[in-house]
Image (cartoon, rainbow, N blue to C red; front, top):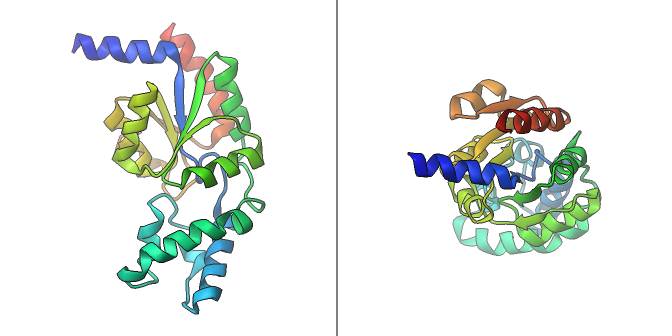
Length: 215
């Protein structure tokens, strides 16, 4: 137990903070809807894009499996990622407080990292579009996010989904959840979130208090 406590303290002192992407740092619903609409037009297969964007978080393959037979999912995942930059980047804004939250980490001498289930090159395009500078690890969902969080030595992981909470807990990181995605505060707390914020506009003040308490 002492070794674990010491390790967590060291990670907190280094201040590496992980962030989820979709519905945490960016409101990806308009862009993802546009990609699904284009994919539906190309394939002639109906996709309820309004429904699809209410359940962002899990890997793309899981959503495509609702609309296409299993043998086509891999092919259409590749097509989705190929057309994504053209249709999804420009319509996608930063979430309220996202830029300031990442800036607060840097201002405190820390390192922000983005750990997402999204294809990393497309995630990087989103960050560049909204003016966020952070390292990116992609194609990691739920508990698998712990791999990158441990590698980076992240002491905090910020996300909007129950999967993000599970990833933080698997990594031994503090789970900070925001209610800007599909999960409400009660669900996030029940999943084990240590802190629940309304959105990232509350994050700089929380970070200042967290650092003061740690000191």
